[in-house]
Structure formats: C-alpha cells, structure tokens
Amino acid sequence: MPKQVDHEQRRIEIVEATWRIIARGGFSAATMREIAAEAGFANGGLKHYFVNKDELLVAAYQRTFYRINERAALATGDKTGLDAIRVLCMEMLPLDRERQIESRVAVAFWDRAASNPVLMKVHADSHAIWRNFFEQHLDLARASGEIREEVATALVVDELLWLTTGLQVVPLLDPKTTSPINQVRIVDTVIDRIRNLNRAPVAAPTA
Image 1 (cartoon, rainbow, N blue to C red):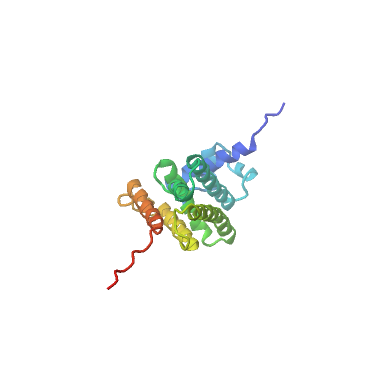
Image 2 (cartoon, rainbow, N blue to C red):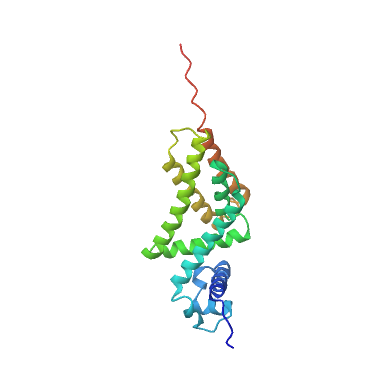
C-alpha cells in the first residue's frame, strides 16, 4: 500500500527550512536548491509544493503572520483596548530568537515585495487585518473612557503600524541600541502617550 503523505505538513517543513536558511544567510542564500536540501528533498522536489521562490516566500511570510496572530490571541485573553493593542505590538517585535527569525523573513519578503505587485498585495492584506484589530480596540478604549472621543483613530493606527514595522527592521541592523528592553520601552512610551491623551487639557489661569 502506498505511503500516505501529509502534504500540508510537508509544506510547513519546507517553509521552516526556508526560515532557517534566511536566518543563517538572508534571502539570497535561500535558493530552491538549498531549501530542498535543508528540507530533505531531492533537487526539484519543491516544485510539487511551490512553483517558484516567490510563492515560497509568500508562504513563509504568511506563516510568520499566522504565528504572530496565534501568540497574540493566546496572550490577549480578555484584555481589550490599549492593553490588547500592546499585546499584539509585543508579538510583532524581535524580542527573542523566534521573533528575530520572523523579522528576518518579513524583511526578506518586504524587499522582494517592493518590486512585485502580487507580493505587495499580500503585505497590504496582512496589514489591513492588523489595522482592523487596532481600530476595533481603539473603539473599545474610547467606549470605556480609556481614551478621549476626539483621539484620531487613523493617525494612531498609522503610528502603531509604522512603529512596529520599523522595530522589526532596525534591531536586525543595530541590536545594541535597540535591545529588547529598549524596544519595549519605545512601544510603551507611545501607548502611554495615547492613553494620556485621555487627560483633559489644563485650562490657562485667568487674570
């Protein structure tokens, strides 16, 4: 009887092999030949699962996106508002070895996506999901009185997305000044500032 092959598991194994190669030598080292060897496939065996390197890179990026969301969902629990937003932000940052590899995969994907409209749309779709998460929890923060009614949601969401995206890149280039402690401090400073917008402005003293 022919051996049953779990094709989804094989795809995951290929993606994880791609992660390991990117972590060691960057995207340029992740040739189809090297990925096949890392995953234990014969040369050319990947074509049964991924047509080309771009398709494989999309799968690697999407798995990174899935893992971030999965961890965030577990860590969020019953948190809402700015506390839930902070949880997702922390899961995006390269605070440990696992998340550093995820960031390297994301950076490799972004470099490729910058000149590829198909990959650019994959990035846009993932950020749209995160944008929606931030918007929902800012609405909850507003409804609970955690932030003021006039706080501009779109500007806050842009700031959070651009901040976390930047913090996925810079620590890979400058790990000394962007240590995990400093990454957390930067995000907390921004979130505390958003929370402090809840305070009513102090009226100027009258003559």
